Image 1 (cartoon, rainbow over the protein chains, first blue to last red):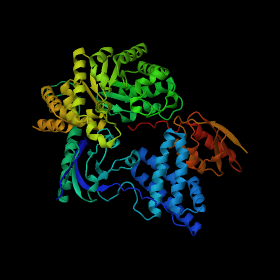
Image 2 (cartoon, rainbow over the protein chains, first blue to last red; image 1 turned 30 degrees about the horizontal axis):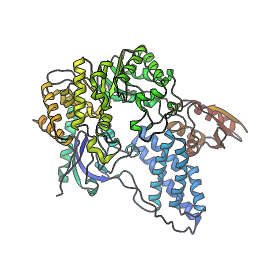
Image 3 (spheres, each protein chain N blue to C red; image 1 turned 120 degrees about the vertical axis):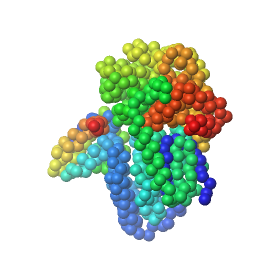
Image 4 (cartoon, rainbow over the protein chains, first blue to last red; image 1 turned 45 degrees about the horizontal axis):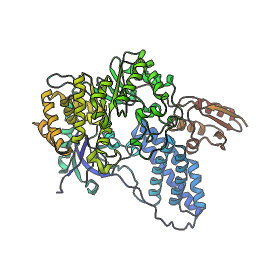
Length: 546
Length: 94
């Protein structure tokens, strides 16, 4: 029996099953063979594209919802005459079918890339079509999701957003070699309530069909007897059902209320099983636009969410864009290092009108509804910025202005920042990235990016204590708030509310209900006393299991 | 040749669901409908790749043209879908 593997648990749950790895795309040999029969090559290329289109339609029919629409459009692209014409032209220039598909797709991708935004993202659909057609033509295995006829653990180097559209219920867990707690894989897994382990060295060497258990809390990936897999799955499902059955507000065992809130991008993400919204991302209205959406347009979108919430609380985050998510109307220059550039609140330095319009729209929408509307700015670095933002919010007629704490400078000067606003909310994803000087996109640094890093926890603790002394609310709205263990640690530090994606709520609620405030304080102390992220997690896991 | 100018009603522009609906509508017509933006040459509106490559945003004006029997009806049908906001959220599930 092989040694068990260990990674970072990023989405809670226990399950077991055979592993199957994502197929990697076939590579075209650099030297193409000569074309002897151009007509035959055109026929083969046509057949390949037709087969790809049919396969995509077949998968679309299986998945349903938004993913099905995306796939049906990709199927239309595979069957498209513009692409077929391009391929035929390349064949007439002497390229065999598989190479002709590669060339024609590359040309089309350039056109899409030049358009930018959502149009540029369609280049990824074309790449998928090419990989599938090339595999068909070269008689190589299809790239992409494995489709064994049994529930399985999906293994990949990392998952792209396109890969994840295809995940269906036959995937019982995800294990990736790269990625961190804030990677796309982690966020997706939590939103689907799938146990997931990332940064798991050695997972790519495991043969397809080997049966493993996956623990999305501890990060353990263990080789198990195939006969026991159904039992392990059953235990995990029972646990999940037990958690799902708990309802009601978040509170500790000694009845300290900790509101559990949701991170949402719109009405579709709302559930009734939460005290409100702790992070309403507003980027969806702006992305892909060449001109800023009008006040009236924004007002309508905000009102839809406010009305759906009834009298519950909602914390709206003002536009969080920058050179990494460029919006033409902001007039931002290209930057070498967008994460450290003009983003979030800083875009107001370039053009204050976008924020002014947004605040007006929020105030208008809030006026006609019962919802308790709070507004906060992303990327606040100084108390002066926080005060200026709060003044704008109050001038707009909104009662509650806050600052996100994601820049270490704001956390280090938490007392001054807290004094300047009505509340703060800690964004652990960016706070980890900036504190540890580790890029969120760099999987090789996943261990540093861990929100369990004692340096990050120290900053959270000092912000929480500043809030407590000033009698102002301190929320956590990063993905870390959805980790049931970290949630206990945050509460023990004095954090007053937790905001997470909907599937994380039951496990956090259950963890809180099992612990008193004194327990949480003890766990928080254990975590900050640890030498590193790994031992912090282990110490808390061990102590709370007692 | 009959032509029509239409302002794209879909806020997100002609990609995703709006593009797919426009292309399917064009493909269902008895005649070929061609579509263009600005000064660029018109392309077949039943080709999803060609329609995406227009890069048309919400509020942009596009020109559609068709010839032969049924051209007017085809333009009417296409203008109707182009002018609508095809990405408007569907009623939420109960």
